[in-house]
Length: 357
Length: 157
Image (cartoon, rainbow over all chains, first blue to last red; front, side, top):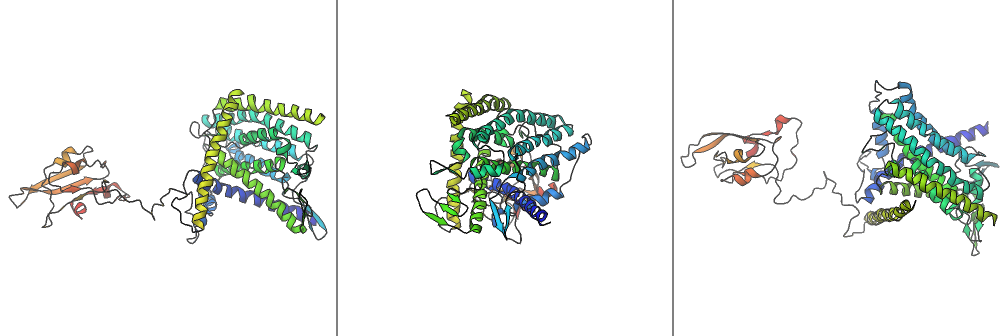
């Protein structure tokens, strides 16, 4: 009974974390783009005159979405048209289940792992779910029965095959280095030290793999440098026929993908919840010197480190989104097939040679 | 592949520029929160309804008709403004002025602001300096077009 309760609490906490951060990513996007462009950004939404630098803006947007007309065009396939946003939302949201937020938390003689499911094939699960998410976009484009949305959906599919290969291949080198597909054991492994001082983070062991993964994962989010399925300025995109909350779900999915890619990048390449030189009982600095910490503080540090890294990558992705114009269709194909895949193959060969020496 | 690598450097340079903007602007925003006064600001935004930009002295804003000392409009209904107006938004009906020196005065003087393009030709054309565009009023949006037709009373007042 208490096992079920613990799982339930973990699921609720993870979902609340996911949705809340996703909501506030919209705020971050508006504010960060404003600061980059010497503006102030949305700051007018207020409760009883308290503006709080626009922190209520996501809730104002959400309320607006709820009250907008939910319009389904007559010529669309109604069932699939309604299903599409839910499919794309579900497959992205479900990946949070295998992301480790921290190490074990000990309360009252019970050890609670700070992740929902400790999956042996967690990495494959994440890759599979992220790839399935494209079904929502293709379905949305197709079921709308509109030429432009179909074009958007097809572009999404074409983009998927060009980066998904590189995404999978870039992680092969990582799996070779950490002989595990279990995300929590990958993170555990990254706590060890290289040469006695450098943490064995994925970015130090697999710099090329990290770069390829970042590019491919960025294409996965379908945001501006790679926003072919959307393509605001030419075809309005796969969600042209959507309105209200359904459109909001598609947009939430975009931001949620940013968040999931950040957590993946953190977990796989930047040590997850590992704080450099911190073990389960406190800091052990490589230059000698120790700092003993109680268990609760250590867990707090781990969760904070995870959140900080995730926040940094969200920030970086939004920075990139507000820097570059969109890639042309053939340029994305070029980047995927001619640059990322050869690089990831070279990474696998290089890793193999280095490991056999 | 070589071509893609070629613009890779430019990609990094581009993001360094935006990151620099972000860091510099955030620095000034934080200084403002800490109430340290600096010459430069983090944002160039003018928060419009509360803050307003100063209107330049030669700015062409809402029209007004000038009056003589006795309170009557200076206009002599010569029709020069109505003739020169490129959007044909001025309508004048003349009547006889009791003063034989002046001869004519406007019975109706109507400007249809929904058509006016604020070129200022009417001000240039007027021989009597009867019409000016210096009220500095730039907010006269209305809910219907009828309200935008300004007659003699509205233009004098």
